[in-house]
Amino acid sequence: MKTGVSEKFSLLIRPTAVILLAGVFALSHSQPISPSQKASVSLEIGNWQPQSLNESPVFSTFGQAGATPLYCGGLCLPLGRETGFRLSAAFWSLRDLRRVETVHSLTLHSVHADFKYWLVPDFRLSAYVLYGAGVYWGVENESSLLGKQLSKARPRMGVNLGGGVDVALSRRLGLGLVFAYHFIQFNQSLGGVEDFSGPKIGAAVYWFL
Image (spheres, rainbow, N blue to C red):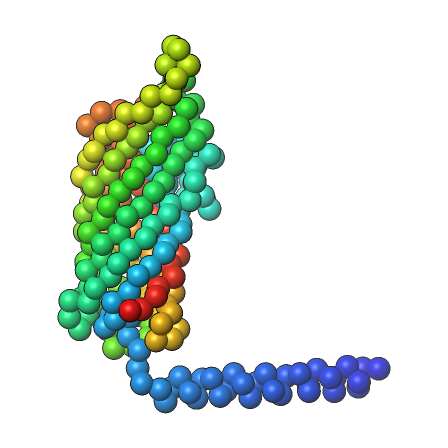
């Protein structure tokens, strides 16, 4: 019985190993693909946790209870061999606020302009540094005495700093990881909090143009 299982396992492993070796051989002999040299459109999903929302900040999978993931779409254009310019827009919401009873939820919309500096620009896998700025609109949803919901928006500038890794899977498809810190502080309270600075971690899919 063991011999039969071993033979079946061997028959399954051999073609799999051949396919993997052929793929590695093809990649090593193909023309280099570099994320830094191609314009791309990206979709990103991740976690952003403003630390002031928690008395004891913990960087968990999706941050504060009631918070949605951070959704972001972007366009990246190469500016040279190792530098790119990225324009993106993001959305994040917190729907379970307990600091201020009249405020039942808040949302943050933002537009970012960042520069990406790839550390290994001529290879399909490269780490990069990200830095730039963003404009944030904080929308506070309140309940009035008449039961109606009111919205108050507060715009504010912020600074972004971070880094990540990009990998080109093919000439049209790529994946990426990003670790960043957003520095943002509103002039007025938003859901009982002014400082929304905090870390972000995200995963992205790229379509190379």
